[in-house]
Image (tube, rainbow, N blue to C red; front, side):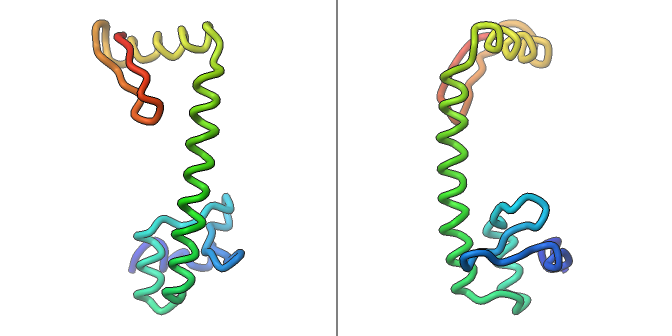
Length: 104
């Protein structure tokens, strides 16, 4: 039995989309597929969940990009120092969401 099926009692449906009770976020596609296979939700519910999750992710990434663009010089320096500490000096780093590149 999958995690989503075992924890279906920890979900709710809002606007036709299945969401986790803990954070209100839509379930990922693999979890929804497991719920459909188990007969717990319909294909229509799975489609609405996928649509809602895609909207949520687009909003999240837009907010993240805006936050990254508005970081202070101190925040950038701290993040780079942490990366240098974790990866070592001289490592090429790329933020896969924003495309920002730098060397530690």
